[in-house]
Each structure stands twice: as C-alpha cells, then as structure tokens.
Length: 590
Image (cartoon, rainbow, N blue to C red):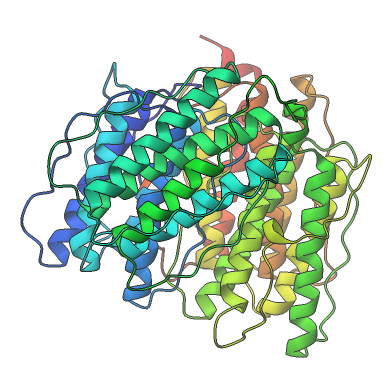
C-alpha cells in the first residue's frame, strides 16, 4: 500500500490567525540563515555584520526594509542574468504585521531559487515577545549580507535616487494643499559627507514629526544623530523612514499617487543628496491651522471591484496587443459567467494568471520567482487589486525587455484609467478567466503531468487540513496504482472532487456561488490543470469560512519527474476519498 510521497519539504503547522511581530521575527531568522548559505555558496565565509538594536520601528518602517532587501535580490538576479522580478510599492493603507510577514515569506522563496543546494533544510524556531524593531534589526542584517554578494553596498547615487523620490512625494503633498508659492532650491554645498546627509534626513524627519502632530497623528520619533563615521547605507536606511512617513501622510489626507521609477544617475555625491533633502524640507507643507486643510475621505483609498475590473481590463487589452504584435491568431476558449462569487475566488484566479505568466517568463529565460500560495484568510478587493497589479508588473518585465521592447506602461502610472460602477467580484473573475485562457494561447503548450501533479498534491494537503479540522481525525488515504489513465480520466476525478466539495459547502450552510467546471470538447492536460485551479478556490473558500488557519510552508521544492496522468489520477482519487470522509457518519464515531 503506497501513500503520497510528498515532493515538497513542508515546514511546521502554524495556527495563529493574525500574524504577530514574533511570527515575522521567527521567519526572518530563517531568512537570515538562507542568506548565510547563499553567501557560503558564493565563497563568502565571514559572518554577517550584526546591526545594533533598533528602536521605535513600526510595521510601516519594517515593510520598507523588506522592499530594500527585495531590491537587492533583484540586483543579484540581474548580475547573474536570472531575469528581474517585480518589486511593488508600499500599498496605500495601514501596514500590519501580516503584510510584513507576507513579504518575508516572499523573500525566503525568492532566495530559495537563488540557492544551488535547494534541498538544504533551515531550522524554524518560534520566538516570543518580539517587536517590529527586533524584526527590523534582523532584516537590516540580511540587507547588509547582500552587499558583498553584489560587490558593494548602496552608493551615494543610490541614496540620491531615494532623495529624488522623497522630493517628488513632497511636491505632490504640496500641490494637494494648493501651495504654489515659488520656493527656490538651496545652493549645493561642496565636499559634504554621508554624515551631513544623515543630519539632513533627521532634520526632515523632525519637520515631518511636527506636521504629524498638527494633523493629530501619532508623531514619528525623531532619531538622534550618531557621532561616528556614517556610510551611504545608513543614510539610505534613514530615508526609508522618511518615505514611510510620507506614505502615511498621504493616507491621512486620503490621497494616493504612483510615481514612475527613477533612472540611475551616476557620479552623485552626498552634496547632491543634502541639496535635495534641504529642498524637500523647505517644500513640505506646514499644515498650519491658518490655512484650510484639503483632504478627502480615507475610505476612498479602499479598492472596490470597480477598480479591480478596470485594472484587469487594462491587462486583457495588453495581452491582446501582445498577440497582435506576435501574429498569434489562435482563439481562446469561451469563458462561462459565474454569479455570486466572493473576492477569494477572484484572488485565486489571479494566482492562476500569475502562475501562467511565470511559465511565460520561464520560456523567455527567466529564473523562477515566488508565486503566493492560495490564501486561507478573508480577502478584500484591495488585496486582489494589489495582486493583479503584480500581474501587470510581471507582464511588463517580459515584454519591455530588449527582445520585445513593447514599452508597456505600468497601470500604476497610466493616467487614463477607466471608471466603472456596480462591478462585482464575478465580473472581475470573468475578466481574469479570459486573461487565463488568452495566456494559454500565447504559451501554446500543455501543462505537463509533473506540473499538474504538484498542484494535485497541494490540493491533497489542503483537503487533509480541512478534513482534520472538521472531523478531528488525522487520515491517510493509500494511493492505488493505475496504468494508462488519460487526461479525460483525470478530469472526471476533478469533477467528482468538485461535487464532493459542493456537498460539504451545502452541509455547512455556506451560501455562495457553485462553480461548474467547464468541459472542453477534447480534454487536454490544460483542461485538467484549469479544473484543479477552480477547485483550489473552493478549498480556500472552505478554509476561510471555517477559519482554518493551519498551513504548511514549503521551504524547499523538488519538482517531480516522470509523472504520468495515472499518477495525477491516483492523487486526485485519494483526495476525493479524503474529502468524502467528511460526509460519512462513521468518521465521527468514537
């Protein structure tokens, strides 16, 4: 009797419904171990440089540090010709430990793909009573650990770009308050050092803190100047605090704007940085009580299906332009409309699109990069919006390369966004499903049994978690060995599994839409894969409904080899039997 031999090296079960700084810290320690291993593989044997204890850091500051590390991961990939990855901005909402946790998980998986020994096990330990400042300290150590991998740390030119971004954001805040008086840029003082740049950054933080008080916000603590020789990296770090607070000010005023990335400028010095920061300080609105405060409802920043629909439509048009320019005449399959869907289904469909885009990137020579797992917590339209923005970014990475040079504009910076009303998650889901099928026409290849097997085993593990939660019994279903099973046979198993899950939903009084898996005239491996993706949305919905937070984290993945449709059939059959145990009286007998 054979049981599923997992090709994934899973971590421990995690039960916390809301992630805490201690959870983030625990994962950050694993991340640190992974960076140490990457350094060893690159011949760097000296230990990581430890960072002094940090103070007064909040999740909004820590998430900036995760993006700093992600930027360095991207530079490492570019140096080694692995292909770039998408780096998102900080979302315009209150940042929570869960957001930071998600970014750290992404960093772990991104670094996993950079390791030569991807079977390496990294021990996990759950820490307690940790703060965002503790997490920040570890992440800064991780960031510094990349400097030798990149050949250098941040340069004055890197810091200069940060100062330009800050200046841009402050000019935006100034215009939002209708302050148009001419403020001249201060003269550039020659021969300044990073110490002067750090002092200028602290002066700017001090003014921001004063502004926050006037806006009845908890002011950011003003750090004390360090009496030592300062490096550009420390100035860069200080400017991340400035950026975090400017984002917070924008959210307080109920306004949001994205800015295109700045191009690298060489031969910049601390004098250039100080000039920008002094100018930024002069431009920052004072928000005096003698001037009317121009502000908008903060709830207007919350995304709805209307905004997600406009974004998805923009991506669909972009994909049609790709097909037109490449001369692809193959028509996509027709998409059925499903009423009454919740955002979690839309999110999972977005993951499907992201996964297919990753496959497209792989065909273009990109190394793999992280794709989020299906969620097990309630999903909002804002979170769907952020995921689909990443999809747009990933498509741009492929088709804005020198090979294609399509010069696609990021939706963030697109100035003619359409405005819709009364759109529903089902409307968005329909568009994302169309994107999925259009991506199939560009890929023009079937999913392999190996790829489908991976998804099938993930489904098995998730059904196992649901079964344990509902029955309080740990069950293992033996795999039966088959030969000569065709994709049509596997597809029939997927239909049966969906029927079983639908019965579980009805029994649990889960009043939501029932998905019907489309049946193609000719069942192909893609038909099976797309069916399993639909099923994964239903499983995620069950987990959210019953608040099933347990999950397994894959720290290492080993792609299975030589799998056949018969192997996938065996896993799905076992998964179906496992789900059916939930509906049997005998399961609940003592």
